[in-house]
Length: 281
Length: 281
Image 1 (cartoon, rainbow over the protein chains, first blue to last red):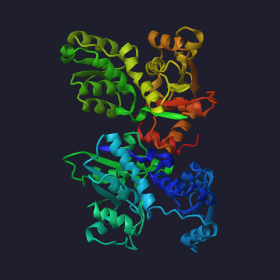
Image 2 (cartoon, chains in turn green, brown):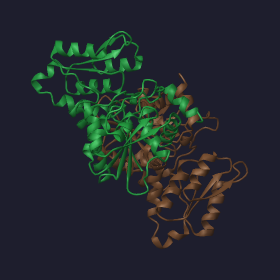
Image 3 (tube, each protein chain N blue to C red):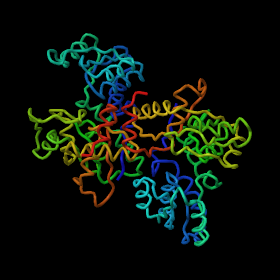
């Protein structure tokens, strides 16, 4: 089994791949208008970092009560931060207004062809580093941007999407043949990067056409996977460990061929990580 | 600044490089006799792993009270473990007796040309991955095997050896022009992988001839470096973080050129790592 450690990617997650590819499509003459995105997580930093590399202004709409560490990290990349009250304001509306005012494109976190194709560069790298396409690839899945990108980049590989227990909407949708949402009463999961209530037509359609299959991991399985990755020298956040968790739990038939598991991110609070290391379950 | 993450090497440390290179020099007709080594740490696993890859028997002399996790990990690689009482027996004598009885070579952890040259492959990789030799390279130093190997592999780079405070015998030796030992009353350091009381003529001589310089890091600086590496997604053990610690503390003049810092190992007890993450100093 091979691990693709996107936790070691710039910004600690795969997100910059898609953001950079999206921003790189903007003609040089329009770059001065900048870009707009909303996110409380890794996508915010991905867009801010890509914009900085391309010399573009970036405006990121983030909840006022987002962790200081994420607000500061995004601001440190040179982005303008616009905060909103997550109980009384719509981040979509705020971002759309700013985008319209400035003539700047809104960069979605997964529902965008250029973003999905950018995430797919992780798949191209896997094939290059391995010397061939793997038999199967197991990847964490929130909105499905990374998973769809991998399916496009590695059409000969069987893709498995791994989701947190009760948040396995992509997996259930793939079985049903239509998009099913996460039930409103789904319990909270530590996999904060994967808590998307509804995937996009494009990511679902791509994965469905590719014959992708879904697996899920429990919270206990995710913590076990984080401890396993630790022994390999890798810091992996809960959502980033979902695929490894499902594999360790024996949910993937890997008796034949080569298996690649994507650890998609490593941005985890030190205290939370320490608690997992000290835990026994 | 670039990090060479030997914590991600097989076995979680650079040690397999030297062990494999030493064992690979043994003629095929003599391999059935196996090899002998003594170590309570990463070298034991390096030799056991290299022997397994080459299909050779390995006998490792380890203290009876070594951590179960290290005894088990070495045994799991197929090595025969011979334990000794570290208060009343000499591991050198036991290992020498076994080596003589079996006609099997003893593989030292650093005082050996093939071991040093094997560790130097980390330097060749650095130049290949960077596309050039770096201006300077900062590496943790215990017996000096890795540092000497890097100096041989990268003759155009300035080598800095980083040691724990009070255990900076290589650094002091380089200034004095002769080997100085660690004083008997040197306080314990968490950098267990670097607690060598006397370096070898060969490692010292190589580094002295190469114009290497010494820096040291305090325990507080080492813990800060472990937290810094954590944010990059890397699990680094205390000794493995000594070079990063010295660099973060501003002890290396890096205003010009390219700096590569070696994080030499990541084998750290989860509880100890969690305590560092939760600590504030």
